[in-house]
Length: 241
Image (cartoon, rainbow, N blue to C red; front, side, top):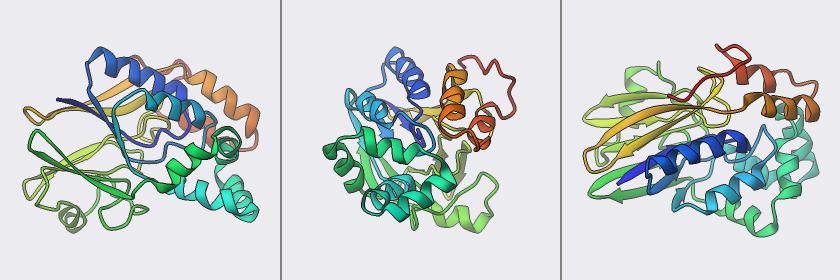
């Protein structure tokens, strides 16, 4: 079975749509979503709608937690908006109650077994979904993450893609679909074939400028939301790889 591993879409439907088109061409049968469908950018409703047409397994990220807190507290919403921009506030306006409930009720962690392959889905670490496991994490941190009852331990949250084999366990972070922080201009994700345990990192180009324009319009004082889209790339973005 071909499985796509996606994380940190962050309301960037333009990036997600490009990824899903490639996934369909690759005959992916299942999406594993490692959290943070919302936040930063402004099309969370389209993101959820796009994912609903696929067979998927989803978990909650820290931005879904922010969404839940902001749903109940104007003060929490104001704090999130000040730090991260209007992505959550737009999501609250555009997502219906059923979808807000769905995102809020997602588990922090899930175990999945596919064709005998055991996977653990996390947003951050297996012990704290708001903890960061970076590619340059120390040996002990990676060893703690490599829970040996699993073939693959999946993490997101950092927006940095990496793979590491520790104690016979493959640690995979697909990077970010909506806001990669290692290489802008292209959505970052993984295709895993569970029949042979072979995986590929994929960078899928998309129309970055349209997302940047939305950020300039909605959050003109937050240059980061635009600049990060072009990190290590020129304004033209990147081609599919």
